[in-house]
Image 1: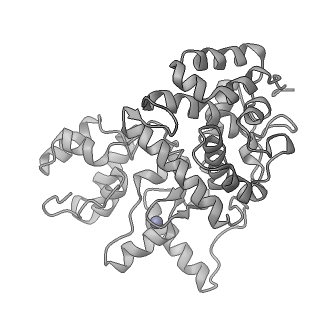
Image 2: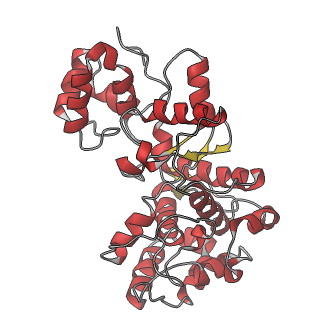
Length: 343
Ligand SMILES: [Zn+2]
């Protein structure tokens, strides 16, 4: 979007990223004032101070929502929006403008850059601030010239095989479509399915596959097998809080694994493609088959019979056609045993 006298808003750019890039025109004190008043610096488009500012530069509230609004409510909290695509930032700089932060990097189900088909990189959590696009870019440059500026915390993950990234990208596209469209066609089903129903099932799986790293052996969700070096989360107050924490962690390898498992349940690719990549996901033997029944029975981290009952209640409320489509997963979940997460 072009706004007179201000930097052009980049494709998929976050509001705070654009405000920071506009600082030389609108004044740093204004950028700080906006950041302090915004409940969410990237996506709070109800804030009166920002709406007034945008209307003064000729942007109406509806246009601002279209341009800066989130495409999902599956958002990381501001302080955890640390995953980025270096290739995108390099292209920004090569084209003669400041690097900027993309909205899609802030979404739980998008650990892969669609443009470059590459797994995002997770920045040093200490780098996260208003200027983060420049900071992570400069740190990457320093790294290349052996001028070490980063600390050695191991939040980074092993490199993912291209085949695994491509498989997860297929599922990421499926969930992105489910966010954007009210109806989705699933292969083998006569009638389209509501995007909201697909998201409800996918959310249940994300919350369980990405369960945070609590005490072994019951804590880690199955998608976290390749995560290493990160501290285990303490101070968890409830199952709901733990699920929220699990889905607030921007670790890209875990999210990639979770996507692939969601793809297995929704039958989004031939099983041979899963078999090609499963070694790289570090899966437990009881879900190694990739079979939806095994994933439902052994891959979910439901803590009690009551919690299984709640999940079953949601699944039983799905339209008949979708329930049939997910039959193996649902049957597996019925046979699952509650784990003792807070032992
Ligand atoms: Zn990219």
